[in-house]
Amino acid sequence: MKYDSLMGSLFTVPFWYTKISPWEEVKGKILSIVENQPYEIDQGVKTDYFTKNSYSKEVYEILKPYVKSIICKHITSKFPDEVPDVWTQRYYARSEHSVHNHGNRGLSFILYLKFNPKVHKGTVFYAPFDDIFTGSAIAFAPDIQEGDLIAFPSVIKHSSQYQTSDEERMILSFNLFPNGPV
Image (cartoon, rainbow, N blue to C red; front, side, top):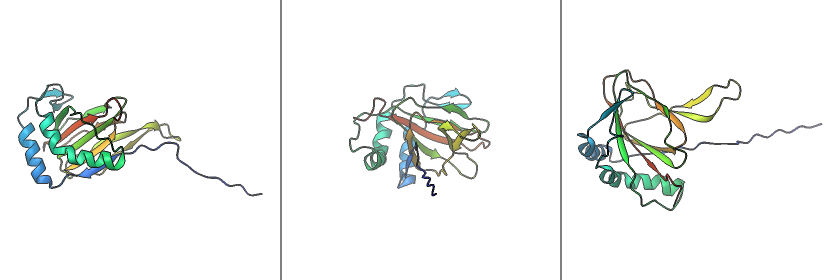
């Protein structure tokens, strides 16, 4: 008697990324806009998330072609008109951002503005389900380089790892489609 077994996948969690080019030029433009913003300290991280900054539209205009390439190529042809709230976070030694998500719908984006892979640790993402044999959380940390722009479902929990270097690690983040695709 022959027994066949097949394997499929119940769930997959996509994430998308693009490399910003020309990186040094784009980085310079963005840093000149965000560099002198007032910051608050949250979990040892300097952030302007809680302050209403005035740079969201200007920074988003710079990033829009890269965001559009991800959304229109992989997700939907209907690109949103909304300008998202953009914020930055700066990490130093003994700082981290604990596990969190960005809401129950839409996409979140992270741009790695200042990131040295020799001394910095990337973002860790957690599967929305546990390992079937151990019950442990399933974690994934993509190989990140400065100038990478990544997009992921906002509902996915993630964290920054504990930073051990005094060299500044800086990200820029925003969310799109909080009410679903247009």
